[in-house]
Amino acid sequence: MAVREVCKGRTEGILLFLIFGLSMYTTAMSVAFMMGFKSLIPVFQFFKEILVLSVLTLNILSLRYRPRFHLLDYAILSFLVYTFIYAILPIGDQGFVDRLLAFKSTSFYIVVYFAGRLSDPKSIFVNKYFNYIILLTIAAGAVLLVEVAMQQQLQLFTGYADYCYYFFNIEPSGVFGLSTTFDSDSGLRRFASFFNNPLEHAAATLLALSVIAALYTRDDNKFKPTSIGVLAIIASFLSIIFALSRAPLVAYFFIIYIYALVTKKKYITGTVHVGVGLVAVYLIYLFTQFENNNHNGLIAVLMNTVDFSDPSSVGHLVQWVEGIMSMIAHPLGLGLGTSGRVAGSLGENVGGENQFIIIGVQAGVIALLLYLAIYVMFIKTCLKWLPLLKGKERKICMAVFLIKVGFFIPMLTSEVESSSYLSYMNWFLSGILISMIMYPLRPQLQPANDH
Image (tube, rainbow, N blue to C red; front, side, top):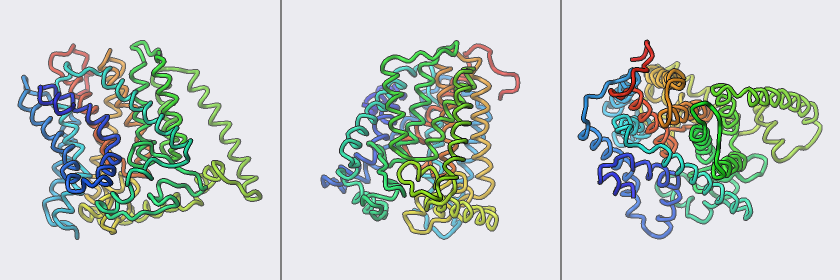
């Protein structure tokens, strides 16, 4: 469907594939592998990149005006060029192919950004694609309920473990024979619905919550969800609970709090303040009781997270320290493929489990500062334009702002950019936002200090 739309010149149709294809991408690939289509999977794996490059090319060829570039465009392009130098030069111990794979994981989302950036903002039906995300969220919640009722992860039936071992050299691990991300130290199952893993499922919920807030918030800041919207909110809450991923869970409520601040909903901010106070009192109480009682389940997860006593939290700390020490010793980086997903598949990972540290270890402090600058500039730009925009432009602006805010916390404990669904949706929408605010025929609302 996405290819048909793109071939007809409606390049925004790629969103169909980004939403419905990438969200269940790994599940589809593992099922294909299980059914004996092993030889076709490499073709499938590169389809998303080919589709993005095709959309970018078509958008460039169909430009009817010379685009006005934003400061963010220059910063993002600088990051792409800088990391590309690390890919083509023999920097580090990894081979050329491994460096290219790491470059794709580290920087291909920038190509996705420009595919959205050079789209015609007038041709994009924001409500339609945001409603597709709503439907996807409800579908994910429905699959989750079946998983919870059966107390079996969907990935146990899709050939997930064999697929990951064959293509990524990741051996089955954990209590359930999938990977350790599917189980917790308390013994509770973590569910991924049809996403790649519980962390991606949880982070996808953050994206969904941001879209729900943007779609149903009117220009006067009144939140008016439909019955389908309410169902999506319930599905998102169930997803974030049963994914049992701590950083996204914190980010979920952080998004709600930031949304309330931006839209001036004092009853929400007041409720959050009271809730934080009650949680603080409850934590103090648990600390006084925890040593003398054998707690299990959610309380154990909570307490082991707070006092950094569980292996997962300790593992994060070890990886962070290792990555920071590496950046101090090698400020220009160790080379692409030395940290993150590609390095993990090669068994030579240094300082992973943090998006920012992964970039710094591979491409050095300069690349890290560029990435951080881009992130901060996006948040600043969204805050600057949100009061000025109306209609679909305001919805895109609010969604991008909340996504950036929401993803920050999970980025501290994972490589969010390695998830095609999360990364591509984030950056394609970001590109559309900049395209909208830089459109040459738009009213002169541009802030005085904007570029």
